[in-house]
Image 1 (cartoon, helix red, strand yellow):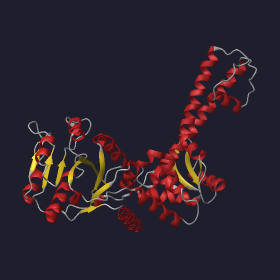
Image 2 (tube, one colour):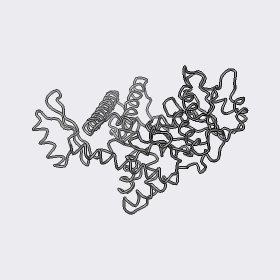
Image 3 (cartoon, helix red, strand yellow):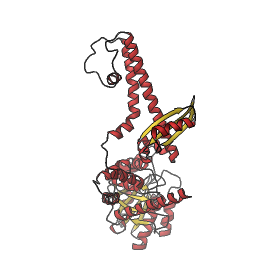
Image 4 (cartoon, one colour):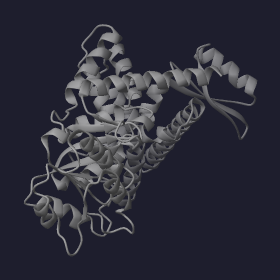
Length: 428
């Protein structure tokens, strides 16, 4: 993509320059009034996806194409301004050194640039005054700033260019919801052929990379704890699991436990489930430790533990996770992840709770997420097996045992639905 800035006294003159120098295919990124006339920033071969990649995190604030183009133009302006400022500084240093009669007064711009951005291996043949050293240090700082500004575009240009099919495949995978790193990794494995072939191959690799739990908790039994932030759906998921177990095996061999003694009325919803299902609910507190309660419930086939949604800054966070990790009972702790969370939040939650010796995860709120690639990418990168996923509030209908292939298929259907909605909205 080629970006260029034009100045003229009027808009008509500026557009004429654009037409003569850039041709009819130029895209106008921005136009504004400046001292002495108008300024237009244009681009050839403009690609919105490429622009987002070059802008990086800044592009997240661009809600539409026009805002993205404006941000691209602003970046180009800053780049040109920095380049102009660095050239001026180099010119000043050359002129000052020339007035002092230096032997290299006629050094080229390229030589000065090289001297400014690289470390000197040998001492200079002529003595350097302190004043000149200060000027040279300032010039180096200017060029270092320029190089930092260009790093995003320079890094992109330095990478070996993949095939056009690989690039389009990476873009589609990012639309699917995968991170740029994971999308790039999957697309690079497609060595050649049609885009659709690469797309199918990438989905197969994704399905292979997403681990799931083979055993049903309801049949296998044991002690399972659900951890995760407030609002992720831990208590509702336990209610769904408990209801399904009672329907299949009865209420006599099931018990519910909560470790949440940090919030007022934190147990109410779990006690409601217990009364409806006729299942005992025990609370871990100062008088009853987790191990004491699990010892009393050792005759139960399945014990489900609900926990408080605490973060590392909350009182009791360390205490709660330590209880789970130190227990002499075999507690299989699972992280509850909301599919509506941003990938960074998912990763942060995982780092927050992984000290509890996580055995897997449960994905919730699948029905509320626009795309599911974020969740699939998360479980693939963290290697957490997915035990269950939920897609609604109905108990227990909206609880499903996880399987990789149906999950990926569901994610593809969700992407198609989103694209159709966007097409209808654009048409309207």
